[in-house]
Image: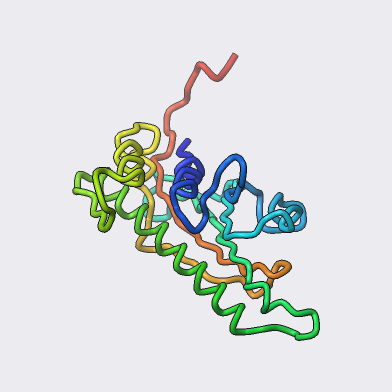
Length: 199
């Protein structure tokens, strides 16, 4: 099984706006953004941008290829509105909300750029990473190690990044603006029976 969530967690550790760590977790595996999710139950402990990966399985047999399965990965980006824009005496501050929404859009595009680079590298193209001051950055090292790892290579190849879809949700979670990103992945379907799984 391709574990995109493991790639996303490492990216969240390296990506400065999120800076996920054990001491300050900002990446979460959740079922969905609802009242039972870890994020919604613990939002008051968090201050900076966060991301969450929906772990529920959403798959179907691919219409264009009966020997493949189409999976949908759903990723949420969350940015808190600036503190001064959340007054209890005003209904909403659209300037603060807009700023937070555009930050989520920036984060989505930064993630997609890394995934496009990984997919290109898996397909034999030279990764394109700009900026940096010296040597091989941690991001470049992460990309290089991920694309040669057999557990990730096939899954990265199947990501349908040209059809990625994202948008902000029309609700605000206690001052947090939420943007959902959906990425489809086409995987080969298991066509043979594995007798070792049976009595």
